[in-house]
Length: 453
Image (cartoon, rainbow, N blue to C red):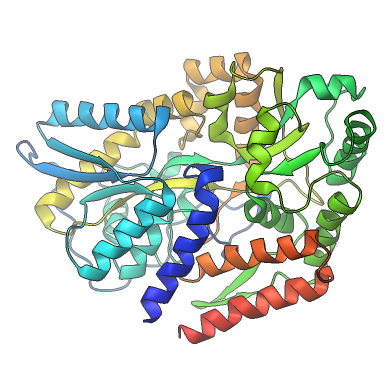
């Protein structure tokens, strides 16, 4: 029953966010992770628990094999993913059985159900929160393969993106692929009408609020700012202000997002509502409101770049996310996981995920979808340089890579986001003080953690 409870909590969180993010949501912080631009270079996590399968002979032929792949991306992202997967199959003589399993929530539901029934599992999946279903089941085959030098150059991957593929700090159990951050998009027409000069955009949340006041004076109340995923943004804001959200004490998760720094963030959030700059409890409608031209600023996933550029009725712009004491943004998105531990299938699956995460293929996917390239060396490629130079939205998204970070996945992550969203909803509607509501949320998460021990 405990495992079912954890899965249901996660699925509830996913169901609440899938429509807004289309597969781009956050994971959870490890106390050992250094935030922002001061983050230390990635080092392999502690050795994975005993009991893994041995690394396969990765150079042996794989022609004639079949790979069953589930994926949780649609639209342009889904089309590119299937195209590249089919290219792999053609090049290596592998039959690819590709199944779109719905968005984040639907795919997580199907994977969880298959694991509970112990049947009908895919060999590989592209999904959100993958480490819960691999590392959470003591499957660290990817960690073994990386450490045995089997074709994946970890040193060329952005540090935070590899951290996003860790479960409880114990080892790599996924590979990054469709990774995103939140970007602060804006309606240039509304800002021009408000007399706000965006050639020198606001750096801090205090400076940003001054710009929002100009929008309010021009366009009216509750048309200045909103976000499609309040929990994702709020957690980034916490880290910007020195609150690390949780502590990982030798495998014991302790939520700590109710300290003085957290209260400061919550008070600022509440002031956006009380000052008529952000509507209360309207985050599910934020994207539609923005695209209809009735909202000046929107914090949303970078994967919207490919969807929105050239399609809006107004001139679209973007700036880097404001901060409190330091720039800091949580990563989100989908990862590649390998479920089948049969050595023969594992060999083919590993070659497949290495193919997809190669510099050439992943960069092509990133530029075609608005997700971010996972390789540092990609930034030196001419096509990336051109995209950054010609598209200011891409330029903003790539700039933010220098201060992104990832949370460590843990079992109660669904409860965490659900409680944060509930807390913010109550806060926005004046149903308690910042300190009261933050403390209640922390206590609820801790209660869930204690119940699952």
